[in-house]
Image (cartoon, rainbow, N blue to C red; front, side, top):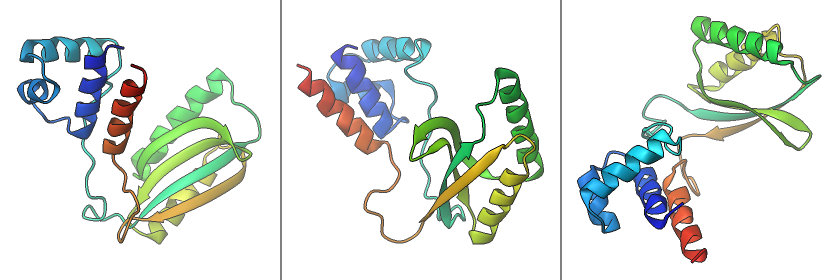
Length: 173
């Protein structure tokens, strides 16, 4: 990637609502250049979506859960399709603030799910629904609960990642 692309991605992660004109000023290039580069980054899939990070406690959430699971066996592609469909049906009946569910590896686990919860009771309901899934095939489940309110060493934000990307590009020079 070119320096301008790194800089643009970094600025957008800090504040995706900035106009192309404002981004051009911050980066030191013309507005048409920013528009052209942004468009290319969107088409090439570097930019998947534009979003913001709210104050979760003001939205009524007390907890964020990081849930690790170990599957008994790796699902086939056909089973993955059924799992996804089953998960969508559960979310229609019992909407949860699920933000990520992915495969991974580490600590003896191969799945991670991150969700927000209004309180501990809603977390327990979420766990109960997760365990009832006909395709869960989970034999080990661990949870890490994060309190949303109070002091945080570093709250959830992409600004720190944006700053890191800026320094990474500088190191490559």
